[in-house]
Length: 189
Image (cartoon, rainbow, N blue to C red; front, side, top):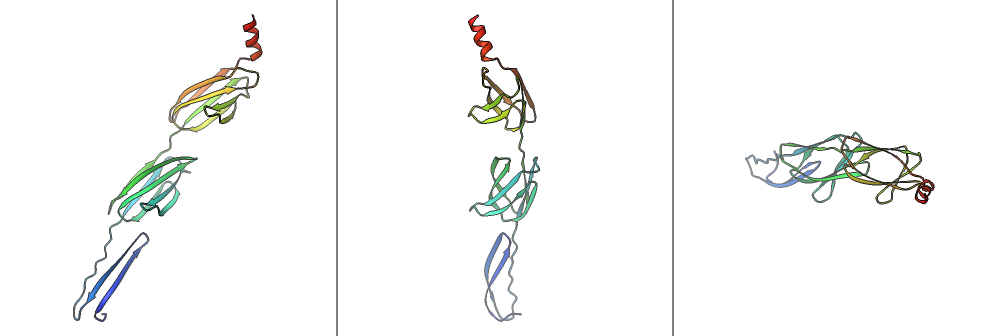
């Protein structure tokens, strides 16, 4: 029982708040229904060290951490999710519906390239000039697609390499570099 008056009622959940007014009259029960309907997100991923950030439509950080993860108690609406694994990012807009848990899977698929040369100690450069290391060299976590490399070593002719990296597959590149001295001798002969 409360005295007759106008009351402001505030209900709060971690990610939702509501204020309503209720007028209480003598000898009456005033109903006041607060029944929010929340949804959730079940986030999965194939890399155990992949991280995520979930933001509300206004950019506010809702949750972050490692995948897989379940976020419950979300008000219906749109959310921005960014999943990251070793510098590779995937960003997606997710819609949360009331009384439903939406599943989203964030798989990072990679291919591998193994370089073996004779002689060893050859620099492997990407098409933008990034030095990946020296042979023998195994490059993991390459995004699927077309890749261009240059194999080079002082005193030897450079070798361009173009290949298509496929997810969950390994490409082998084995080659011999030709000595500049030998090449000049052949050309002179």
